Amino acid sequence: MFDDDDLAAIRESREEWEAERLDPVLDGYGERSERFATVSNHEVDRLYTPADVADLDYDEDLGFPGEPPYTRGVYPTMYRGRTWTMRQFAGFGTPSETNERFQYLIDEGQTGLSTAFDMPSLMGLDSDDPMSDGEVGREGVAVDTLRDMEIIFDGIDISEVSTSFTINPSAPVIYAMYVAIADQQGVPREEIRGTLQNDMLKEFIAQKEWVVPPRPSLDLVVDTVAFAVEQTPKFNPISISGYHIREAGSTAIQELAFTLADGLAYVEACEERGMDVDEFAPQLSFFFNSHNAIFEEVAKFRAGRRIWANLIEEWYGAESDASKAMKFHTQTAGQSLTAQQPLNNVVRVTIQALAGVLGGTQSLHTNSFDEALALPSEDAVRVALRTQQIIAEESGAADIVDPLGGSFAVEALTDEIEAEAMDYIEAIREMGDGSMREGVLTGIDEGYFHREIQDSAYEYQQRVEADEEVVVGVNAYTVAEDTEPELLRVDEEVQESQRERLADVKAERDDGAVEDALAALDDAIDSDENVMPAIVDAVEAYATMGEIMDRFEAHHGSYRESISIT
Image 1 (cartoon, helix red, strand yellow):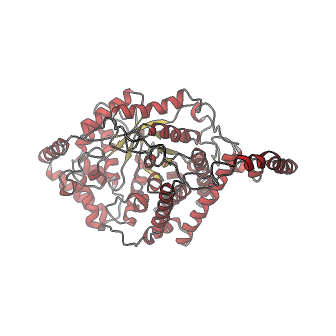
Image 2 (cartoon, one colour):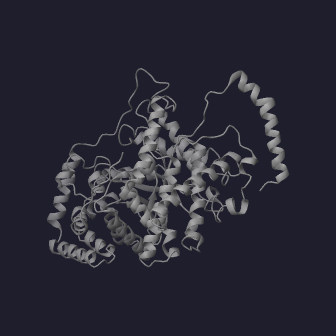
């Protein structure tokens, strides 16, 4: 992109600047550190010039927004057309309490709903299961049957709102319930919008929530993708998630590489089912973390779009631009939040949110400042939402498409992150003898991902404890007495009321219809049919979450990690 003579002149001028300007300052004053690096410990240079991006080809590496390789964004106008979808993770206690929080957020200007579920629901357990005791409604809303979903969306027109569901092992059941709600409201299935997380590969890599082993879990994900292509074309049946990989302690590069590897594994699994890549790839979505190192995060997002666009065309023959455009949701880094001086988290979240916007996210969740202490209070969640609205309406960051594009530093970091992420992707592919699907599954079985993340998390903690990594309010700028904001508390009676509603549903439903629906689900599992139609029928008969997920565990067995991590 730059003339060779101009580059030579710049290199010569830099040497003169270093000798005449920089060295005297370094000799007299030095710098505040011998080494400068990102949160991921990726070393950054003092200064970047065109010489650092000398090999950059504008057309092949950057292009224009809305065209491959999408480095500069997936839409030509980006936020000048419309801002990103503003979501706040919400869900706690009873379905009625969650409905109230949803209504509050909609009134405050939120443009998309994002649903948090309690641990029993995440694990496919009913609220009356002994294993659920003490966890009902604690970290999200309890959902046992379609009745609970009816309450959550009471008074909310799902034809007017996009809804995200953060759930994985039991995701097909929640998806089926949302389809059933659409049927009840008279909303055509092809019009419902939203995203199901449903990323089981990252569960085995990082978050550790599962019901059945990896291979049948992957098959179930493919069932949801196939059903969505046919029935709900505006709904994303999977959100391939690096967020939890990063929260587990990975670096930004590992987060990007492992997430894209998972995405490519899903592509291969769908193709093996007989689906054409351009049929399903446009409905694949991604979910990334945004941490404190703002330029590293921006570069990560830009590199991710470029890698996906190139690989899905080169390796899988995608022809559709919609298949090549990597669209993603971003959430600010929960792992970065501190219980000490919690109001400092407002600043952290603002920086992280700005990185997501500058990096071109399609959807954004901003964490609340009190989340290191409890579920978000109304005041905290409003501040988190206002953070997004101020960035959108007051900062000017949404007015220029890819405003950091062309920055020597950002372009150099984008290239470096792309190269290092590709090294990981190629290594995973090699583990599968040329198959990303088998490479990821092998990496799970052999503990590859666990070891990589564990090592990075350990190294980061060592840097914090050695004061090489400053965490304001924790190992620097501490105060003797700290204040705790008013916290949201989940009432002890939530569990009892949820169990009572579940008992009422079981007493009122048609037991024969439930038995028939579950028997049809058994048949679908046994015959390797797509199980989604049977799950929809089961939830509409008011079969419970646990009753449905028990069928899968009975057929495929449970799973326990057998790897040894050293």
